[in-house]
Structure formats: structure tokens, C-alpha cells
Length: 515
Ligand SMILES: Cc1cc2nc3c(=O)[nH]c(=O)nc-3n(C[C@H](O)[C@H](O)[C@H](O)COP(=O)(O)OP(=O)(O)OC[C@H]3O[C@@H](n4cnc5c(N)ncnc54)[C@H](O)[C@@H]3O)c2cc1C
Image (tube, rainbow, N blue to C red; front, side, top):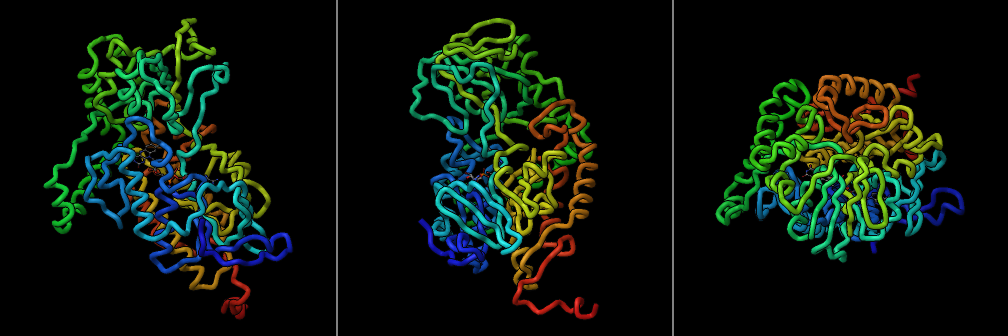
């Protein structure tokens, strides 16, 4: 459904059928959409966004489960260039965030640069044409530059439980909610107690007949300081200069303080852990249940969750918390390791995503014919500044490895990377570059420093196993410092860290003449 790319040949007859575009962006969540808007605003129309979903939104298009909402306040969890004075409450619900993304895409006129319902099945670098050759379910493309904005939490991870395929009732992942399934009055099992599960559980309890919550590891849950905005506040945000910027700044710096505890002095988090302990005491009277929901690791080691109704939900008579571990799923029941068989009509799987082992990594193939999955198989995923990968020329990720946060807005991180992308494209233009490929030593040194930093953080010392860690036990997901340092680091494309080649139409560089 899009126009706006030029046709072009990559050399061979077979390749002549490919449609060529300057920059091809995969994915249209906050990251890809933000990149598209930036390119348009800079007057660069030679790009295309390929999105497998049927509209923009990514996370917020896919996660439509009951209770879905952000857990970073909306005034920060939104684009800096598109503040929204109309947020209905501090932590906006999913439909409002999704509408915000739709409206933003329409306002900046980038929808006709999107190709929806199209899956990128393979993107491989072609050394001869110095282009990316991109195969999709809607045809073949080529691009000078490829932007990976595919999301870290986009590929649902299903648990490997014996017999799960034999279950006869409704079973679905939290990010693929089946709205046709009528769960009212049913015996429902909720597997998982992470960020999505603690939003879903309170919505299901009381509506379903009985809810069994299967917990592998208890999370720390803090009170959720959520409230609706009053009309007068919304008016102030709209009409009083800087009011909304001030609110945003206050949220930003308040959250940044947490980095001191996460990444520098974990003992500072003890005060936060006390607040979480009080939250348990407030919500649950039964000492046994309190014990079952109290983690045995330090707060911050896994994602800190927020909810006012999770603990009261677990304390309800029609809700059971089950901690024995699942041994097997039968067509009509879940069997735990202690041998108990619990009849169940429907199962909601809230077990997270393929973060460090995304299937997308198999679909991106670099200059040496190896996929990202292959290259990353020994040491886990790694990139230079979370964006560029040696051997994958002209590829930049927006929100790649080690850019995740446990405390603040991922939109801030995405916008930082978007600066980097915009700067890279400007440098290519200015210096007549055909390719850039991050130097192996630059990438290695960057990651060594980063992993060194990781050693003192709560994610390493806090005594937990989390989805932040990969199969090698390395934290390849989180940014281990203040986000303003990440912003500064990605402000400008640092050409010196890259091997570059000139476009054929460029004069030979001066230094080569001199040699
Ligand atoms: C339930 C939930 C709540 C969250 N709440 C918060 C929060 O409060 N604060 C916060 O900071 N973060 C939160 N996050 C993290 C959230 O994922 C990020 O904030 C942000 O939305 C990520 O944007 P993205 O564009 O990087 O990825 P996504 O939004 O995941 O977008 C990636 C897009 O790429 C597309 N795509 C992937 N592969 C392909 C392919 N091969 N071909 C075509 N298209 C492809 C996907 O369809 C998707 O649309 C939450 C995540 C979840 C799951």
C-alpha cells in the first residue's frame, strides 16, 4: 500500500526485479516509527518501513490483554517531539498508547511510507552491489542502509512443558490475546508472574470462575502511583508553557536516581525493598502466602514491577497461587511436580519473550554469509553502542543489544539511537560513503568495557536468574548506566570507529593521493 521508493537494479537480471530504496526500516513500533518520522522531518523521503503487523504500534498493537498499560509514566513514555497533554492518567492503558502512535504516524505523514502485513523473511548483505537484499512476503527489495527496529519483546516465548500441545481448551500467549475466548465463569490458569501477568491476574480474578496462578519465581512488586489526570492538569499541560516539559523532566530525573542503586551502589536499593515488603504486608494477611510471594533475591535484580492489586488478587478465595512447578499439561488439566492434578478450561501463558535468542537474528545475514544468530552463538548478542555489528555493513539497530532499561522509558533510548542513525545517514551523504562497517576492535573494546561495568550492578550481584541474562549468563540486554550518558554517546555517528568505502562517483580521498 505504499509508494515512494525508486526502482533500481542491483546488477544481475534476477536482482533487477528488486525495488530499491535508500533506507529500509524493519518494524514500526516506537523505534521504527520514530526513525521514519525523523527521516521525513529531515526531508529524506527515500525510505520504506516494512511491518509484519497490519498497523503501526509494535508492542502496543500486539499486547491487548486486559489491564495492559505502561509502567513508566506516560509523560515520559512518549516521543519528546510529540508530547501529549491528553493522557488520561499517569500510566496510560494500552488502547490510549496505541491511539497515540496511530495519531502520531498520521500527523507526520509517514503512513504511505509503510508496507504493512509484510514479513521480512531474509535480509542479506551483497558485497558486489554493496546493498542489502531484502526478501519479504510482499516481494523483494534492495536498500543501501538497513535499520533493524524489530523490538526486543516482539517474539512470544512459549514454555516447554510436556503435553502443552495436547491441551484441549483455549490456550494463548499474553501478547496474542484471543478476544473471542469467553473466559467468564471458567477455570483459568495463568502461567507466569512477570510484568504482563501481574496486570492480567487482577483483571481475570472475579470474572473467571477460578484462577490458578503458576509462579516459578516471585517478583518484587512496588505500589503503583497511578491516578487519573484532572481536567485542569490537562489544560495546564496544553496551555501553560513548559508545564508538560517540567513534568516530564521531573519524572525523568526521579527515575534516573534509581540508576545509582541498580548500577553503582546496590545497597541503596534496600530502602526500595522495604517499600515492596510493606506492599506485601498491606495486600496479604496469610503468613504462608506472604512467604510464597517474597523473593529470595534483592530488589532490582529482575525487573521491578508495580501494582496495587496483585497481592490482594492472590489473597482472594477464588485465586490460588501455585509454586510447585508444572510437570505436565493434559488435555483438561495441569499437573504439578508434587503430583496434584488441577482441572482447567483455559490457559493464559504470560512467560515473556525471546529476548536474547530472537528468530529475527537468523534472518539477517552479513558480509561473510553468516547470520546474526550464527555470529552471536558463541558469545551472545553484542553490538557497538547497541546499534552496529561488525561484518554487517550499513546495518544499524534502533534498540539493539544492551540498550534495555529496568527503570525508565525505552522511548528515550530509541530516540537516542535515532539521533545516531540520522547522524550516520548525514555522514554518508556528506562524505560520499557507500558503506560503513564497525571495526572489530572498536566493537570488542566497547563490549569489554560494558561487561566490566556490568560486574558491579544489581543484575549481576542480586542473586537472581533473569531474562536479562543470556544462555552464557551474560547480561546482553541492559544498559548499565545513566541514560543521559547513552544519549551523549549516540549523539553523533563516530566515523573513526568504522571502516568505510566511498561511492563510485566520489573523488579518491586526499590521503590516498598523498600515499
Ligand atoms: C506488555 C509490555 C509493556 C511494556 N511497557 C513498557 C513501559 O511501560 N515502558 C517502557 O519503557 N517499555 C515498556 N515495554 C517495552 C516496549 O517493548 C518498548 O518500550 C517499545 O515499545 C519497543 O519498541 P520497538 O519499536 O523497539 O519494538 P516493538 O514495539 O516490539 O516493535 C517492533 C516491530 O517490528 C516488527 N517486526 C519484527 N520482526 C519483523 C519482521 N521480520 N518483518 C516485519 N516486521 C517485523 C514487529 O511486528 C513490531 O511491530 C513494554 C513491553 C511490553 C511487552
